[in-house]
Length: 126
Image 1: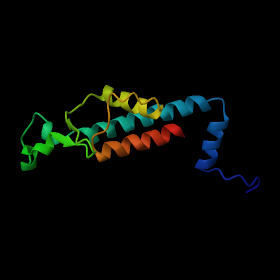
Image 2: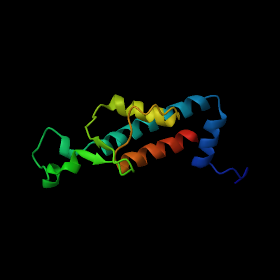
Image 3: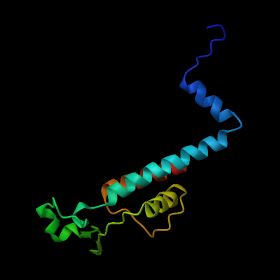
Image 4: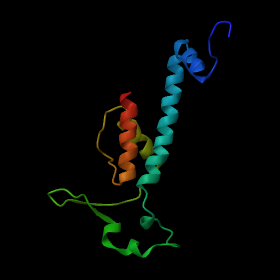
């Protein structure tokens, strides 16, 4: 208590961000968060009804709306769902979203995917 400095995690974080390695630290945290968000994106966008392994398939997988989704807009547009399990595509989506480029070649089709994309866009703005 001599200098009244609290040596806690906030102090360590301030030291890192005021030091010469601040840019490197922010870059590593950004890349790590993009990889984590990519895994979440991929998990949110994969439909079990479209997997090749049909061992435990639910009866709802045979309905039309399991493979073709109504977008709910005025024009009545529908999209055919496909499983994109490649991590590189998920990384591309998350990078485009976080950098606010947003090419639109991949779009979220589930509410969980939209949540991940919205969170990524918010973090990218910060």
